[in-house]
Amino acid sequence: MVDIKGVFKTYNQKSVIDGVSLTIEKGTITSFIGPNGAGKSTLISMISRLITKDEGVITIDGEDITKAKNNELAKKISILKQSNAINLRLTIRELVSFGRFPYSQGKLKKDDWEKVDEAIDYMELREIQDKYLDELSGGQRQRAHIAMVIAQDTEYILLDEPLNNLDMRHSVQIMKTLRRLVDELDKTILIVIHDINFASCYSDQIVALKNGKIVKQGPTCDVIDECVLKDIYDMDIDIKKINDNRICVFYA
Amino acid sequence: MGYKKKTIILAVITVLLALLYICYDLKGNIGYILPRRIMKVVAIILTGSAIAFSTTVFMTITNNRILTPSILGLDSLYLLIQTFIIFMFGSQSLVMMSSNINYFVSIGIMVLFSLVLYRFLFKGEKNNIYFLLLIGMILGTFFGSFTDFMQVLIDPNEFMVARDRMFASVNNVNSDLVYLSLGLIVLAAIYFMRFYKYLDVLALGKHEAINLGVPYDYVVKRLLIIVAILISIATALIGPITFLGLLVVNVAYEFLKTYRHFYLIIGSVLISIIALLGGQFLVEEIFTFETTVSVIINFVGGVYFIYLLLKENKSW
Image (tube, rainbow over all chains, first blue to last red; front, side, top):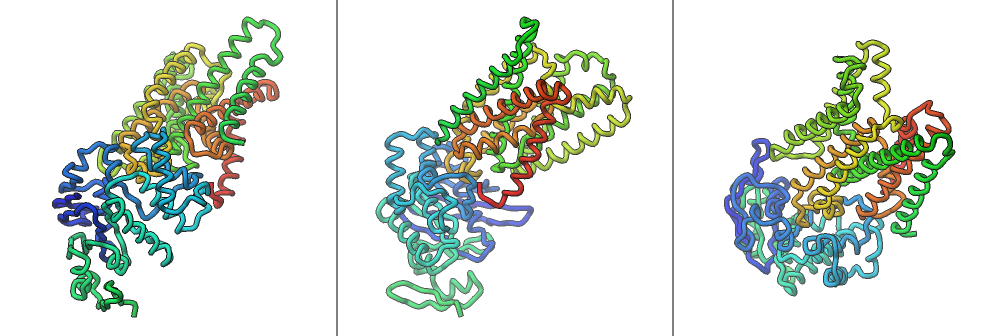
């Protein structure tokens, strides 16, 4: 369980996160939605300790993240940021093997390599596992990074806009994989996402942020609602039910 | 050919070059020449290793392959110290004459400067590494201008002494200092061993490193201190030569084509020793001491730097 209590973050007197409190249950996908600059990425970065918070407490399974040991925390929670500009000459397999660092400290044992193999197979990267990262397409690179996160084998997985620059097929593929991770491996996933239709189709819970505050949080069907969405995005959004999914129509 | 094999080849070349340097044209008073040559080789190995090692670590911390520790302003500070001593006390003064005292004063001030610089910058929350580099660069330029200013004012004969200090040279290293530097470098290396395992992960970038459980601020601060100490030792021993680092680390990356720091560090150390030994050999046998090794290194390094800029658009 991730428990966020009264968290604030200010940059140069501009408040980015303004008193957010939130509880996330295990074994769910929680999507963070909201307009640009709402503080979604900041919040998710604070949960994963990439940036520090000014005030408040964040606990993961009852343990305060500022007090937890770095290495132990890395076995519990992992994050994938929007920009993965790694300028090293790495193959997919080498990148994925970095996911085992919290366990192996760089000296991978047999069971570490087994986890690496599992992660590669899970993301269907076996055939291209010896290709270098700079030879890959955007979708393949994103899958390689997700494989690394899977190899890290953490209960909580945080993703910051994992669908950026991906086409529909790869986006669906990645969202399906995330759903499988939750359903089959009982992971807990927190995801920042811009496409509200993906949020609507795949998440259990949605948290809507605006100007650093939570506007609405709750089960997907409560948040994907015309009134709520108008409040968040300041635009009229039509919601249609297609094959049991709530689809937002806002393109025209 | 794999990077392991290439590393072994580099090691073999290094040993052969060292033997060539020591044994070439060995005649006359062997009892006098031999120990002097061996001492020079040891000095070259020490400074070469210190520079190559600290540059590799520095590039990994900054995730940038064209930044060297010289951007911290330590070279300029060294020249400022030397010029200042000559300016205040004259070239005949005790500190200038006794290389031991000069060595300690230089190392002391350089390490102190780095610690103060780091302390200021890591105090607050916003410990941005590029801010550190910017401050280092500004201070380096300031030290350089101040050095120039004093050099304009001093006596031309004194200026010649100051000018000599601007180029690294192993021609008259003091053997006591070589032993002392060896000890200091070994201590720094032992301290570094605790952080060695983090280097590969640090190369992935700050966010990935934190994600994988590296205590980022703690490790980076200590690595930067090690870098400053090693650069100070190398500079105080033979003079400012940090440009060498840019050259050898990039050659190591290009040659070994791996991300593993174990091989990158060994490779760049060996390449650095090869460059210095080769340069020194040229200085002694071809230029007959008309120039210093740092002039040759800077020339080759400059050409290589232009090449790096030209091929920058290619991914490396």
